[in-house]
Amino acid sequence: MGHMTMAVHERQAVQQHEPREPRRELPGYEPLVGLQTRLLIGGQTLLPNAILPEFTRDVFRPFEDRREAYGVFEHASVGERRAHWQGKEGDVFDQQKAAWIRNTTSLFQDQQTQRFFQTEQGRNWSQVLGKLGVTTEGFTNQTAEQLYSTYFQVRPGEETGMRKFVKTALDAHRNQEGIVHYEQLRQDLPAIKWLANIFGTNSSDIVSQLVDAEAKLETNPETIVEDANREEHVHNQMVRRVNNLAPRERELLIFLAPYVQQAQQPQRQREHEDQAHRQGAQPTDEQTQNTDPWSAVPRPDQPVKIADAEVIPPPVPGGRIGETRRPERHLYWGTRDYPLVQEFIWQDGRHEMVRTVNPERPYHIPVELYFDADITPEQKQLIQTTAREVLAEIGVPNNLIIESPRSAAEFFSLTPPNQNRPNQTDEQMVLQAVRSDPEQIEKPHHAMVFTNKDLYSGNLHFVVGSAQPDLGTVISLQRIWNGIADPELRNQTIQTEIAHEIGHVYALPTARRGQANIDYETVPGAGGHCKSEGCSMKQGNAVPADFVRITQDRMNNLGDHFFCNECHIDLESKFHPRGEDITNNELEDAA
Image 1 (cartoon, rainbow, N blue to C red):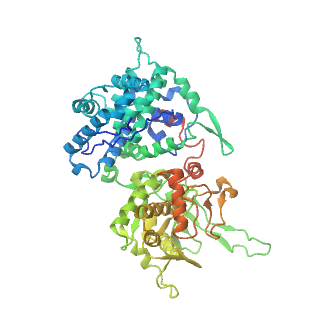
Image 2 (image 1 turned 60 degrees about the horizontal axis):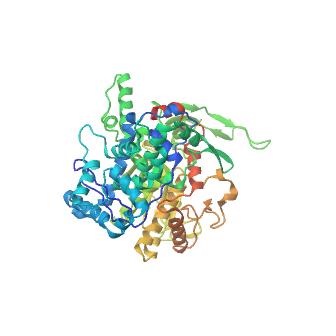
């Protein structure tokens, strides 16, 4: 049987569709309790780093009242299918649809497929698919057209494709009293998941988990509540199952995250407009369009004094009183506990604006990508794609990631040359230029600087990248780019290096995991690194050999992801301290 990803969608939505070449294996099905719970609640609970408190069945709304949540799933499916069809069949809708019909018909007419449908399991599958509107016997192009029309040509007043599919699957398993026969549906989920590949590979998992979750919500909602709230022992602490995400659950939430953020933007816009209305002001263009990434950063309406000037007592008896002083401080950006930009007022009358760096900052700020003039178009595309994937895995909203209109050359021009190293640039001076950048005061951000210039640090002969937590990173591509002949392996290795340095910007790994679980020995003086196999935060020494090995371990252990479970726990502990993340009120709002 084929792994069938043949999704297409109506012409009016996006001119990209998705039949994929079928794979020849049968899918299994495993219920994912944490994911199912979040799919039913929706809203911010769909973000991979969100931590949910204990809850009751009251947070769940009826199927008919959760159209907004399904809208997120629909948009994610469209994005998945668009990515598959990009550049295929001349990017022409009619040609793509024709290819989808050919591939789908070929799949059902294939001899191996037909032999499967003649087995006992295959006959059961045929019955299930028949309930979903697919006749396996005598499948023709017309049958494929009908399947396409059923789920992708949504007419006014009808359910959207994925909601219609889920509803059809549920209705197909109801008895005469209208009650879902859950045990039978559970047995049929592998076949349902296989057909759900019409919405995309990741989306097929989302759909099958939704079918299972909706059925349980109808028949026995307490099982969802009990399973999700069940506490499990993880890293010397008790964690609710809904927060102890399995790798596949995390992958799917990362897949959904950009679309969750997009869905929340209209709500933020309404909040801006409501606030402006209460203040008797008209919303600005930026508020109306919600195009300003800095609108999400905490900031007082006007500068607030958060600390008085003080004298620090001398460290030893006899020390001169008043030798060490702290300035009066005013908050411009950030929060009192985690200031981002402050004004220091010294006792001699000096005023100093300071971009404050704190690795423990528990909220996200915008990220700006800076490209040096020597970065090629091919490299730039790789960097842009990788940076967004890495930042999405960290939990940074997509709308906070922007490409700076300024060139990275500005930072390098402020770096004095070293006569002993005329062909290299001191990474520490580059990061100092980043921190001194006036824009860090006006629009504080994490700066990601990319170049092909060779970098060095201290007494090290060279470095391929360096980072300062909560400030930014500078990464040189040239040694890895020129040191690996295989383009695919080269690109994957550069992705690992980008993830590595960005991870340091977000303070990975943290001391939360204990000093014994952090590597300080591989490169003495290079700071702490992760010990987990396959994690991008492992430290390499030899370039590019060690980086290639780490990359290959990453691909084998983590697939398309960059950080291990330990690093994800570090991030969750910082951005979502347990018990302080999503309140029960927020859960009710999400529902």
